[in-house]
Length: 244
Ligand SMILES: C[S@@+](CC[C@H](N)C(=O)[O-])C[C@H]1O[C@@H](n2cnc3c(N)ncnc32)[C@H](O)[C@@H]1O
Image (cartoon, rainbow, N blue to C red; front, side):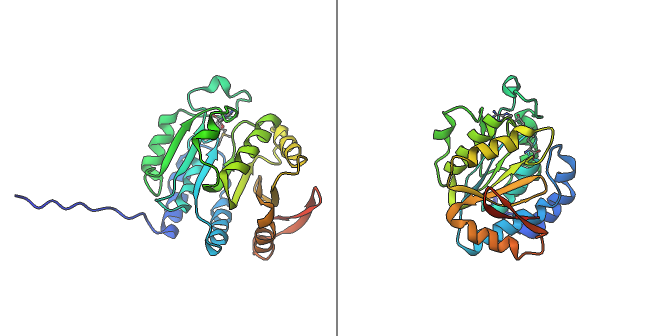
């Protein structure tokens, strides 16, 4: 009888994964993500790991997975990550902000994801659907990207979900914060913040607003404020945020 050996391939070390994804998949996948996120996201990851924060990644608004694959590379294989998009249901993409079929994303996951997508739950859904709330248990996500619908209503909705899904030391990144094609994003952010939620901004840069739970604000703010990425600080609704 022949001897059969089963090798469980370990995920690439983080540095190697980031280097190879940046030079290969990231270039090939269509989407919207600044190259600087290869510096910012590992820095957020470092802050979280130094404080013992664990959890998966989540993105609302995947398109072909350009940013999601970077985020999921930072989380451990035993953590569940969630990829939420309308995918084929583009009739509900009411602001026409891009959007690709689910199988394109699946192919990219299989080819470029650090864990081959093994820890990823793909959720085909409209983020405004109340059923989504029961798909993801609250307090399990540490890296969450809001990049779905760009109306003020979507942003208020998606930030409320983010506030519910993240662990207490988690971070939320809202894309297109200052994009003049997508004015609804900044309108939605201000409307959300006017409700005095426990999710507050600590930094802005590369077209994203970075947010965390109120009690973690000093940790994130101080870390970014003393990092080489800092360019300035500015007040936003009475709270200083770091400009990257
Ligand atoms: C700007 S693209 C996302 C880009 C992506 N994050 C990247 O890294 O390239 C916006 C995505 O949001 C999705 N979307 C739009 N409205 C949505 C909604 N209500 N619920 C879920 N996804 C939505 C679209 O299908 C599209 O794929």
